[in-house]
Length: 577
Image 1 (cartoon, rainbow, N blue to C red):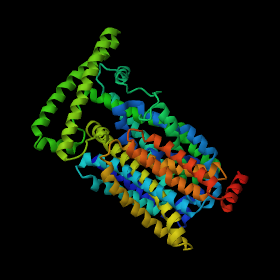
Image 2 (image 1 turned 135 degrees about the vertical axis):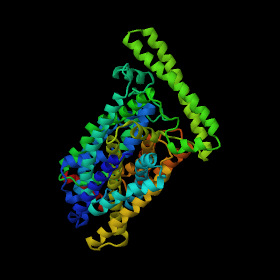
Image 3 (image 1 turned 120 degrees about the vertical axis):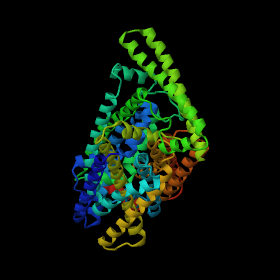
Image 4 (image 1 turned 45 degrees about the vertical axis):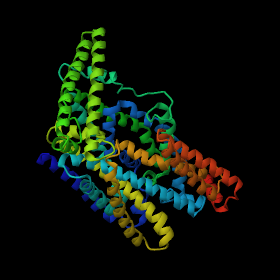
């Protein structure tokens, strides 16, 4: 990386950290530190909600997903608009009027302490693991650039996020989100420009998209119903709906965002921003991944995108075998490149028969190239002693570091690092909030002054930052990071959603029903995940929510009476709605 690129990265990251330092004077109470005194404008909250999702995982993992699968992944979000409308009507006013710091505080008022504590614990576990995957994404990028190992790069990335979160609290997190959203969108548009510019002169944008269509990468709707397929219309509309309801309605990292808004209407509007803009933004990211695939149709990519594995194979005992694969790959690449150009030429000549023949030849060569890469991946896994090899997270970073001009590389690295630190900061802040409010203050040191809780909050932030670094070391090798983070979440989210469904939808649910329903729901999801791994993780959200609700209601109806406190609290909220 050029000195100018490093300068851009250092200046931008330094600006974010200094901004967090400036906001230190604003954070004198736990309400200001965790909720910004409920004073944030709706547009800043909305951008914060979106920026928390549009993390480095999106920039690294989703572009790789687009490279491999095209637009199929966007079906994952088809349930999002409906989820946002439901939440804007139900949970947003409910939590806002309750004047809670965490979503799980409400569960104690509605049910009992054990339900609150266990639900909050599940959040801490799921979000702590997910933030590790967020750290892994930029760690992958820096490992490509610098040749550092993932542990060192993870620590380097976590440090600025921990610093400005400790110093500035949710104020620093939210305003950093706003800056990051702007930089990210600009970086995506610039990348798209250079990807299109990199197409050969004889291949137009329409020709390139036609070729992508021949590989199935422009297919955004798959109406085939299957529990084993993750990216279908029905998986997104049903499984995705339950996932989004839980993530935006029951996950403290999102609930805390809209609890900082000035009013209920502002909180609702901030969520509806995602309903309108999330899918278009996701399509833009996936299109960048698709055009990365098209770029590498005409510019030969490495056989293995993970440079560390590539270098190990070049110098290791399997070097001759790997070199033979590289030569076979280069030959197949040239043949595929020529067939892609022939498709474009036939399209321009309106030669339907020639286009069909060129398409058949292209598909055959594309299949051959993927087979060669698969053999190289198995060789890399065998050489390194790993169970499997997956370099989907290294595809777009390779394009950034080898194909973009000086200055733009620095802009992109800054975008990835700050998108990561931004999301990390938001999630560390929510983890610290739940740790202090739901455990430390409630169970260990009730009644202490605000200054004491602020100090503990900063220690909790540092702890979760270290935890995330440990998880990142393992998450980087688990496949597409955007899938990894959603697999982590889906293991817990449905069951957590089921508890809130019991709390909101019926007065007859009891604390014991909610608690034991939650345990049963988690057991059911674990059983499906380990005994039927072929079932898509999106359906884990449905399974967890349904089992918790059914078991919770059964125990509530036949296992005892509802406590009066929870009923009065809920009734009071409803009377003010």
